[in-house]
Length: 416
Image 1: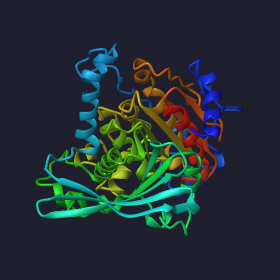
Image 2: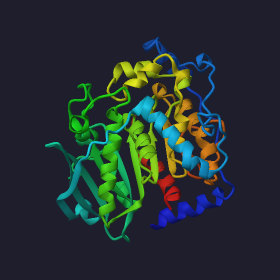
Image 3: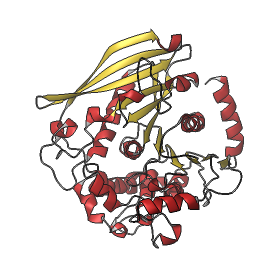
């Protein structure tokens, strides 16, 4: 840890001894009436009014499908966690096929003097092969020089294209601020989601589906599950790289990438931290609120993202046997950080925060000392407690440098 990370950790630890940390000041965030009116006029078919949110009851994350109350960490780990994981596989993201495959890692380029000598660049080809077909996931990794190895790392699931993640650093973007992350003492990596599976409805003929699928079923994996699977293949590489502390890897995603990061963290318990940036419907936001994007809307727009079974819950959210607080609970006792933007009501900031809050009983059962207030934090005032954190910032749907700074502040504590 460098000096700045040590200072942040020491200050935060003082507050965490009471079980609750908050940078909050001022009034709790509320959606701007002007933004609500503008968005409602643009999309009258979408609800942006809190008073129109229907009454709902969330499934109890600590009550099994048979009605048994889960009262111990052992019961959670032995039965309830797997039960919830299977419910998400069956009803939302789908199941990864058991088709055998081989994988290999090739460092195709290495520059020990990247970023003016501050980092080592590694470009790694992760080749997946099965049945005479193959694809390559191109992983870009920067590791800080002149620090003790191994180091913790951030892995970004890039859903915007390689232009934002230039390995030569001739083009820089706040979406992937590699220099600033290196300066904080973390490694930073990225892969392009389309390397794993194309982001279009192609009847699952291309990408990893075209390699591993044999027969499609209503609970067969969708594209988000495929991208999450790709993140795990990157983790497979980190395990082999002596420069990376593979016990301290954070997976990060924005929007559809944020949904993917949550599912990757649920499926793969090797990820120590999950960062879900403005992930909305099918990600952090509670489905039963029917605020902003809904299940029916997302299935109509992106029929390839989820398994076919998810369509049964179009305009039928209360029948869904899970909700998204249960997805976050699957990450416990590891760390999860959720974000929103004040103008991005499509992704339901309040529903995202409530989802995190309603996952807290599992974090507490697993002794993480997490505790969040029912009120949302003030704008640009992150709230952190135990292994959970949240912020809502000013502005629109995007991932900015200020978001990344808060991610790292949280990681300084959560991945200590």
